[in-house]
Image (tube, rainbow, N blue to C red; front, side):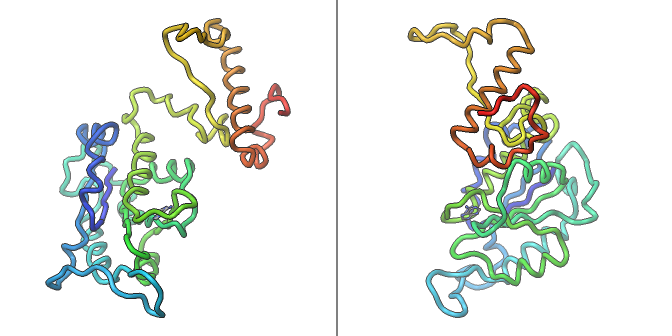
Amino acid sequence: MRLDIVTIFPEYLEPLNVSLVGKARARGLLDVRVHDLRQWTHDRHNTVDDTPYGGGPGMVMKPEPWGEALDAIVASGGPGEGSDTEDGSRGGSEHGPVVVVPTPSGSPFTQTTAVELAAEPWLVFTPARYEGIDRRVIEEYGERLRVRELSIGDYVLAGGEAPVLVMVEAVARLLPGVLGNAESHRDDSFAPGAMADLLEGPVYTKPPVWRGRGIPEVLLSGHHGRIARWRRDQALHRTARYRPDLIERCDPAALDAQDRVL
Ligand code: ADE
């Protein structure tokens, strides 16, 4: 998968060199290219913002640098073009990349969104600062490419870079070969399937007793059916406690016969 990120703070994306994403890059599973938006400015001060039409506080990001940046990136070709990625996947690049615009005014970025984006060969992220990007940029590329305006939650951050880190990590861990164990995201909270809309319950490891606290007996039983039942009960309890809204909208068809009404 190829990821292009256009930002005025390239150094903000340095965490993409470490841990899971860093390893995926080193192994050629992810081709991440971070671009400085200011390279597409032409004035002495490398200006990327201006005052908003209609007045009001704050500044708005100018359309011209974004237009030049996105044109250059799209013209640079699909995944694999000029890169050292090993998967060589090119399927879908004929549609161009999906452009992801992080904004608190977007639709919610959820595990379902992460699964959808993980199926794409090429994503371009446009993290904005200030009050956001001139609307015409989103309109212009919305006519040519698939554009998704996404929010990571109902709070306002100073810019879209932290949301990009969040989204890239959520997507990268779903890519084949990135996690050691292909099954390790099957039981994630929100994972599509049996755990859809349920929060994952508690986990334990050795030692069996720590500061006088043991672990639930069932986990030592070796009885897979009982363990699976216990884990599901824990998930249901936890969801009812912390996210009653998820229980409310739970699809009854997703419950199994032994799920008790809580
Ligand atoms: N930019 C600022 N706040 C944001 C949020 N909550 N989600 C996505 N992008 C943002």
